[in-house]
Image (cartoon, rainbow, N blue to C red; front, side):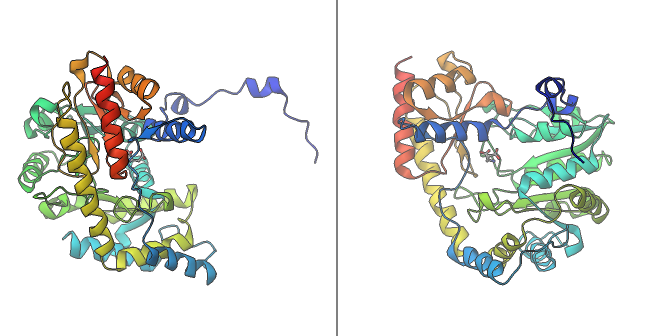
Amino acid sequence: MLRPPITRSSSRSLTLSARAAALQPSLTLAIAAKAKSLKSEGKDICSLSAGEPDFDTPPFIRQAAAAALEAGQTRYGPAAGEPALREAIAAKLSHENQVPTAAAQVLVTNGGKQALYNLFQVLLGPGDELLLPAPYWLSYPEIAKLAGASVRLIPSSAAEGFRLDPERLEAAITPASKLLVLNSPGNPTGMVLSRAELEAVAEVLRRHPQVAVVCDEIYEFLLAPGHQHHSFAAVAPDLSDRVFTVNGFAKGWAMTGWRIGWLAGPSEVVKAAIALQSQSTSNVCSFAQHGALAAISGPRDCVRTMAAQFSERRTRLSDGLRRIAGLELLPPEGAFYAFPDVSRTGLDSMTFCNRLLDEQGLAVVPGVAFGDDRCIRLSCAAATGTIDDGLLRLERFIAGL
Ligand code: GLU
């Protein structure tokens, strides 16, 4: 049946849902895209913005995906993920992270972000609170608000070492608190929660049985020397019926564009997340999952080699930043960011970053997006030449203020 064309006036009358109207687009992605587009216009731009490994995905992973594509792995698969990949993720969690996990407790998602999105959608709703240690990765509050929940921040400052204070955590908990986010190694601060710190968190949560935990472990392989990653579920096995783990292939295996992550945890909730995924995106790209299967089942040499290079770059960025007068930096313990305090310049973080891009062509992310307007975030997931160039531009900018 022919329908009358939609007129301009009728499309103008469309209004967004309250949910969409309140949503902030991801600033990390927006700044990275802006830097790329300025570069493609021929501008002299240096980007230390998005946390994206500059390495190519290791060849054996690409080959496995290509072989699966050639072999005709091009049809719908189970919404929860390829059974072999769910098994392999469960085995990784059980043996590498000491978190006993069955395949039925695993959902393969379109990146870590969708794992968080699905979990928040099935656990949180209006009247529920997300407990969020700050500074935080900027997508957590937006994903919680999309689920209708409110966000209660647990602040920490650079002066306090950006540590999660158990007393402050306990003081923030209310009867409406439903889910606590732990992100270690953390974005943007690079702080790594020690075993003792995780034990202190567990001690608090034992007194508040209504609070579940989601551990975002996407940076688990990226650690500065002397630091170790601990999965919360392994530190507090008695809480395993309310602990979720989110992780993915993007950072460790240099697979950002593949969009493959996972959610693991109590099976009733994971089952609900699978149902949600079956009604929203169906399965994750089938042949990409075969690449991910090769990655997770293969040796960790490639992961270790890249992590070692990120460690060198992290040190290079931290040392360089600490030499710049006017900045203060807590050296990151993991991930691939530095989060220096630039408040002595007298500029708020958004003004600082806008001027830095306009005047020196350096793209970094303002701390206000992560809940700390005194800081800026620089990524060291870039070649050493780019890091050195970025440091020079930053130094010139601050010296010229
Ligand atoms: N998580 C990375 C970052 O914070 C990638 C971009 C994003 O998803 O926000 O830079």
